[in-house]
Length: 322
Image (cartoon, rainbow, N blue to C red; front, side, top):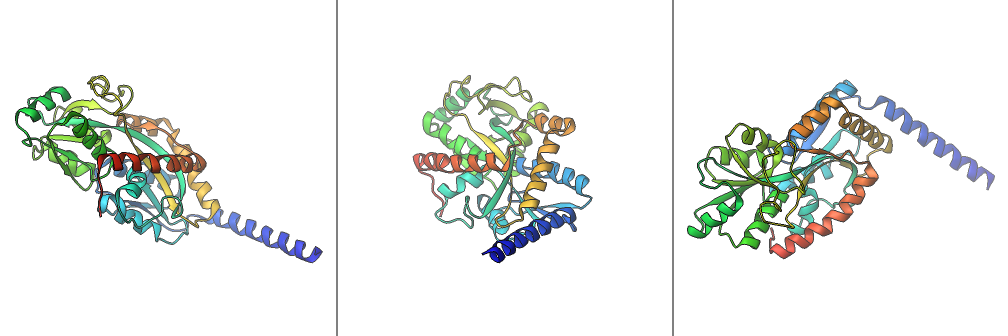
């Protein structure tokens, strides 16, 4: 019995030593950061901020790898099947918690395939219009849609993303006959409205904010509970006459399940540190995000809460993707 206990203590000590040694050496080579969306969208913007800070902290290059498609499923599936050695990091949007209820089959389990690191930041969505559209408010949009059904289209970041669900909820509650046009990310969706290929859009704020500020897009309403500092002149959905339509887009960091705890804690430490830095705060808030910087435990709890929440919204809206 004594020998068994001694052996157990020895093995535990060896494991602790190995874990500590691994943490001291990590990372010993470049790290891949998978973003499951096209370049230019909010998740890509945040990921590149984080990658730059991690590169500076570690002295090893953190390379952003955009793998767009299937509402984020392609990139998330790729990350789920990556080696759990600390050299693959995944940065996701709210599609991570929406897709389990949206798709009949997905290439990951939101509870088992990953270890949550942090919800780094979150942003509301914003309804926008090309300046040529004769609408100064969402009420004007409804009037236009009723006067000429299906003439106006609304771009979103992809089927089942929170901007897409926000657009669908708006259509359902107002009976406005707008044609939803889902893109492969917020970047392409914003570009389509700026280029006037699609007249309206509902997208996450970061890629739209500079265009609204520059007059290339008109902000109609934000889906936050209160007005944002980045767009103080744009009303909330409630102020625009549509209560109960608040929604935001999370920006989460995860690693494949089985990644060493020491690596999880190292990445978590760096995320919390960088999100508290004044320059990072200025960049993130300036794009329309709120700093969250949750712990692994807090982010895991959020995932458990949001997966069933969005499943109910998707079911209510009757949206399903095979």
